[in-house]
Image (cartoon, rainbow, N blue to C red):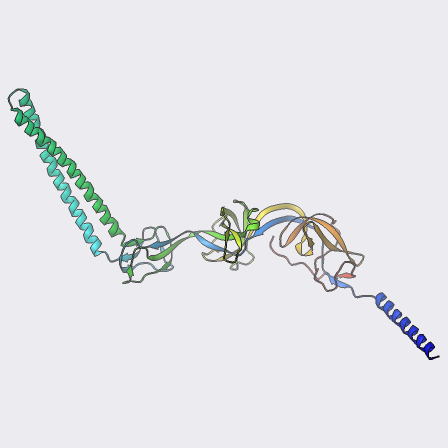
Length: 384
């Protein structure tokens, strides 16, 4: 009897559990709130970004070093000053250089005077030779006299040649003295802005010592680097979209003007290709040293059908979306074209009336889940 009661109790418990499981399974579940979009038409861009932000550089930049030894006498321009080409930025003490220059000029003047005297003597010897030759031809002058004036004429010609060589030496010495003197005036190589000055008045300066830096901010370029995997997709002349934190929401147009012919790598083993980008037109908001976000447009499909990239699931050719059908999320395979972080081109698999879920991180959202469209949810809008 006891065993029979135990069996009945067990059967009752099992029946109760079965009823509970059936109720749980059949109990209506809460629908998942989702945001939906439909296919839109417009331009879709395939873009490549750089491995990090680019840096604005002056198209013309120079670090000027001293070509003379001496002490700084005057610093005539300072950081931030705008200077013209040839303007003296730093002047070195140059009394000795100037004295050597004056000496070289005086030596050249003396050399020229000596040459003129030699030329006068040569003229006299030439005339003597002409007279003696006529007399010799008339059998009036002795041969010895003729030979003597001939020798004097030839020697005078050689003296003029020697004087010319001396003048050339003195001119070269003057050029050296002028260059030495001019090297004490350290000048701006082009119109620009002084970026820094490395010496103070009275400070000793040696050959090769950096003295100042200058850049021409009227024309800028952006230097950046591409991941080696993206480098083969980019060519010179491709359009570029530039943006900065200084002007959020503003897109500056540019183009790729140079791509390095070789891949570089850092100590971490990362490999990249250096590129240069130039704005399409002068842009005052781009200041030297500023960081710039870069998107290189490698392809553009106009009037294409697209969805937000956040609505696409999968990689490679196996991509799908979750669409709303009769209150449930259904999986639909799609064929995609070019894509970027904001939008993806849809080539086939959807029509324009279908509602596609973009809130893929909604809790409980899986294929077959009950869903409820929430009109207040909308995809984030970014730049195209």
